[in-house]
Image: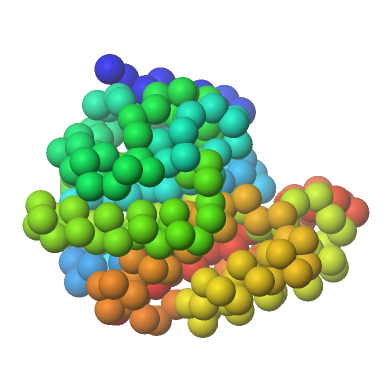
Length: 283
């Protein structure tokens, strides 16, 4: 079964050559060098990236993907996004063997999927959660663009989280870690999230700075406390928590905020913006 793209032509170009040209231009504008041969140190164990249309968040996302390109794309990339559609279960795996974008097809690591479902009762196979969900899909063209330059294949494990409570996310991180060890997989986790939604730029920045400090300190309790105390509308805090906990399990303890922006910068309209950030967690 192939999972067809649902936001091609909306969040990013539906034409392969135009999409690749756009990603190339984004990397060039932000000064992100994509080497034909990465260092293959794989020191980047997790990344936190936005998932809006490329015109809005592509620039910020490119900083994390530039870092990944230099470190090396792992054999399996676990991409975790929040549930925007309301369909699916608490933590939903895809039933598709292949995900398609205008750049081409990406294989799903079905063995990894099956093992996750076996060991964690919160995880189910739920195609409904993935059919129209954009938070994972928009990350794929960046990874494909890099992998094509480096002639490096990779597989994905797409996970949509509906219940983003702390205990669910901590358990998910441990399950990802346990399966990676059992299967001897070289993996990284990509957490897909935007930050504050639809507030003026000053308010959004003030709130988002609290979130970024928590990410930088890898402190999931302060992240959750800030979200609740300041009513921060960060959509993917669950994926972010999962990425932080997984990173700690693999002794990656250096969290680096690479870039912050907001949607208002595109058209100079700062009355109602969405905040975006990219970060990586490294050994």
